[in-house]
Amino acid sequence: MVESNSTLKKVIIYSAVILGFFISIFPFYWMFIGATNASADIFAFPPKMTPGNHLVENYRNLSAQIPLKKVMFNSFYVSIIYTIFTLAMSTITGYAFAKYEFKGKKFLFSAILLTMMLPGQATMIPLFDIMKAFGWLNSYKAVIIPGIASAFGIFLMRQNMLKVPDSLIEAARIDGCGELRIFLQIVLPTMKPAIAALGIYMFMGQWGNFMWQLIVLNDQSMKTLPVALSSLVGLSRVDYGQVLLGASLSTLPVIAIFLVLQKQFISGILGGALKE
Image (cartoon, rainbow, N blue to C red; front, side):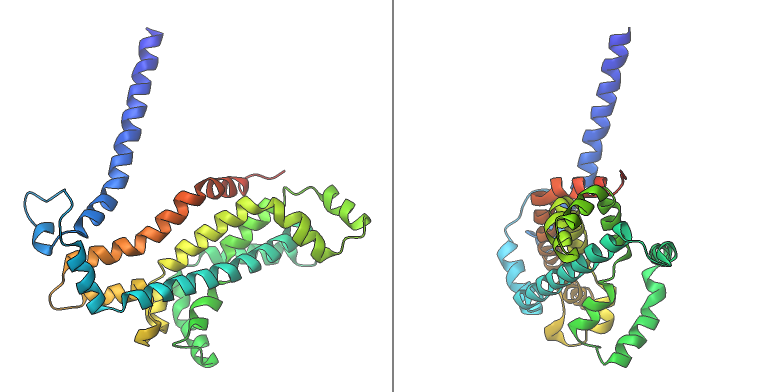
């Protein structure tokens, strides 16, 4: 009786996992299939669930509507630069909050965490006014710089750096290591999973960033892929094959990066949840 109950539980659990997998993966499958079909096939009933033969045509039409290679390059450029600066800021600040004592430390850290509670839409108008005052509108500085002091990034790195033994840092100081050398050669190498996790998270966030880039970037040659794709929906006749192809191209880099670095991502996120 006990064995049959255990078997039944396993069947239910595995069935739920398989069902959840198919529910999660179906939108991506539909998007990739739609990218190979014409609009008529996408809205046909019953829906066409197999790849079509319009992929090349959709790509040519999409390239005629938007400068596809240019906006892809812009997206990679902005996302990579943003990720590098955010990682630098988050690791340095997280290390300071984890291993140094200074006046107002708890208050400052609490204030940083408090900013995570604010919706991004609430800060867009004042942030836009600041960018305008700096003369940064319609430049990548307005896209990259406001977000490099990431509250989540600082929090994640601090939590991971709390696990670095203080005795290890003290021993390095006794051996004559300077603070910069301790940070670069002792602390950072132990933070590789956390840095990889944060890098993936920040790259994905900036890659899919739409609203803020739409607000501050007006020059067509500077637009990123999400902003450029939004112009397709505003046309009088929407070719959903093109739209789904553009969405597929926007999704593939993120999926590829996550699949390659998923172990580091999971390890880094879980590491930040623990404290020595």
